[in-house]
Length: 87
Picture 1 (tube, one colour):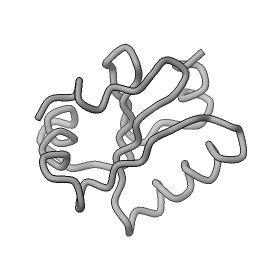
Picture 2: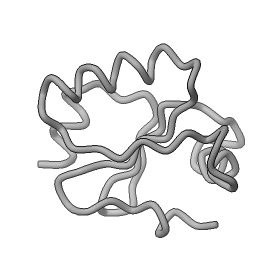
Picture 3: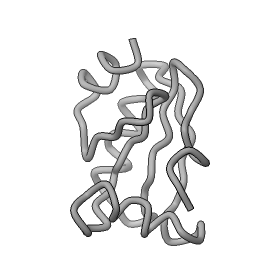
Picture 4: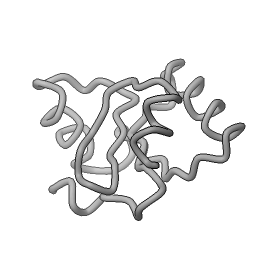
């Protein structure tokens, strides 16, 4: 599985999460309030995504990991960073 499968449209992000991640819940809440569009993908439920997250995080399955439309990623970014990167 490659990241292109999950590359979001311009102006939105793909957020890789787990059900138990407090940082994920916090960022989702902030993004909801700010009107930032995202698609959530739970790496415990979608086959191959844990490995994808590990591939961009030095072997670690660190969440939240966000994928941007240009193919770049960010691990546990601030809302300000997300908004700046999506324009």
